[in-house]
Image 1 (tube, rainbow, N blue to C red):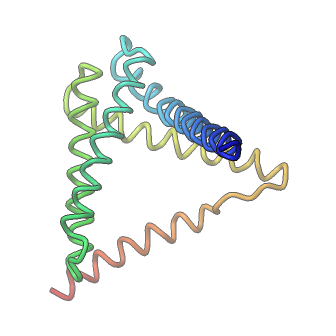
Image 2: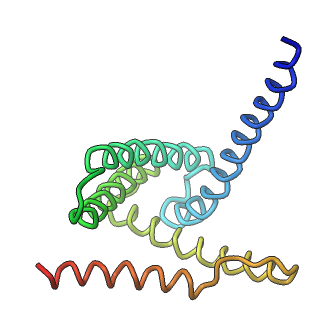
Image 3: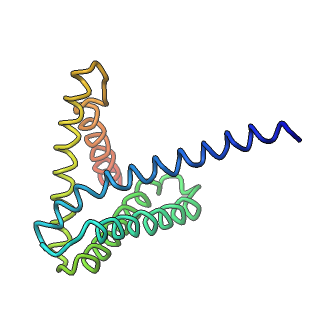
Length: 161
């Protein structure tokens, strides 16, 4: 039984480490949303943003899991299901931001767009800083080619039908 002590300690440290990483990522993801929300409603607190970001993550995570298990063997419909899933996630995010930040639908949409732009700028700055230390990150061309591939696949699916 004495062998379980170190194993239990190792597992506990792993769980604590995962929880700390999740909290760190949650805070980092919330910063651009906070900055964007401040543009549309100056009364927004960082605590409200943390709550809204957590709600979006949990609800969209549940929706994604449901879509995965319902449509796991959809074959050719996978792209269509992914697009529908994205739209539902987006609408849920809009509704949560609208409610949490006490703004209209247009402002909630603006918050998502501005937060995406701020995130992109943060990513570029972080990439430059890391590159100065010799640490590489996925290149911008890789990100753009991924988006191009997605849109190319979408357009091909519409052309075929």
